[in-house]
Image 1 (cartoon, rainbow, N blue to C red):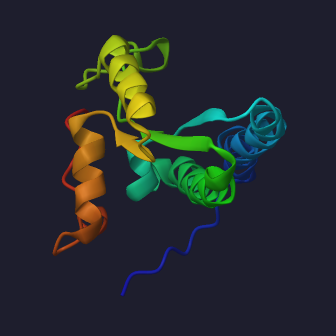
Image 2 (tube, rainbow, N blue to C red):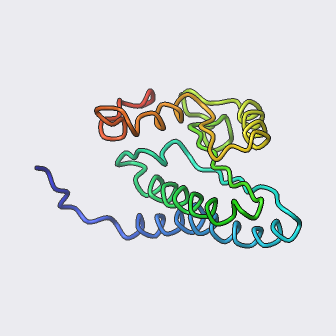
Length: 159
């Protein structure tokens, strides 16, 4: 068995807290702020943008993945509590999307217009979740694969 003997550098823990503040607590606070207004207006939808790493993590993105997994769990709980109030809670899972955040990375990226169209379709269909690209769909299917995809991820296609 291999155990990590190094401690995380304090700056990494601070950055992790920042990720939790935006990716988890940001979802919680924003959802809570809008949920009552949506209910008062007779229903509607909340879209929580998550990630394919909701369902797997690597050492280099473990804090990010943890924050997205927590937001997914919160979204599931929120969905249960708002369903009878005519509020749809849709969780969007996406891999790399062609945005400024990943500009310069030589990796497969989804077209934001395609993701937006698929998300609008999911909202119209009353879906609870959407895995908007092939990587997200593979990660989602991998939850029930043997061996589980998240336990033995293949290498990324970039350096």
